[in-house]
Image 1: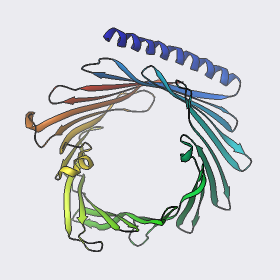
Image 2 (image 1 turned 180 degrees about the vertical axis):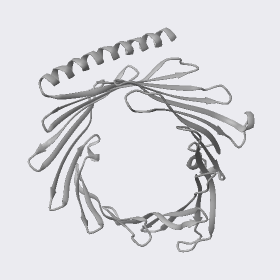
Image 3 (image 1 turned 90 degrees about the vertical axis):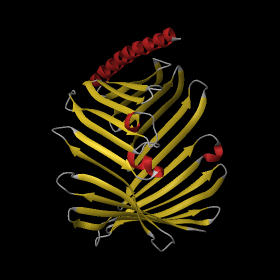
Length: 380
């Protein structure tokens, strides 16, 4: 089995050389014909205790431009199967911007989707139409959208119709603006559905400043209110950020508990996270969850209530700095040292102008089930 995997990996390495050679030749020919050409080849290799080398996926992308028209080819492979091939083109005819994309599965010769878009700007109003056709036919639709501004308010309206059979599906009318008095961004959206008529009216408000500077503490509130046919929901999220010299970037994460649609019972503090620079290019970071159901929100991984980590930069080519991340995650109940449950690492670096490498590793404290994901990208 290992010989088969290694032989398969060597085949993909040979494929990289062939693709790069072809890409370089096409690019040289394109430049001589005054045509822009580029693309990339990316391979993902998964390594585990039971499978040292497994090609998890391969993707190839190529784009060519002639004047104002561009064409794009995307191909994806999973293991040894040619999963998807998509061909798309975009350009302009007079005031109209047009685009079309066709996707199918070469292995089974199965049609996946076809989408065509057209857009037009007229009198500061953007008009667009999207036609999507895909299996099953009952999921195919046509969506018409209008967007523009009225003073400081951004407006957009859309309607979607099924085309097999032809029928009205849904429509929405939305508005975005900034509340000048208090600074938050507000989005209000009315939704209408075919089956029920009125579907929902949603209002979201982000970054409402509650405390601008109270002894170095700044407090903001995000609020989402949804009115449906048979219920109303209120979802407030409170964020507290300090500007203290020792910890310049600390967030206290909380939410307001609502006993009734219009009443507030109390404040729930469910986590804290922050980071602090240490030297040039190095940052220490931490996160602590106080409620089990909020672990994923605070630490980024469900089942782990605490995270300590460090990020830094690595030497890299061509003006883009490389990066390294190391994190340790802790469980509430664990047999590991100090409750250690998982260690992760990630490295991203540009080797040359045409070659990039990234590595991601997860190592459980039990020592079993480790996993390393390697991605190689060649650009031409």
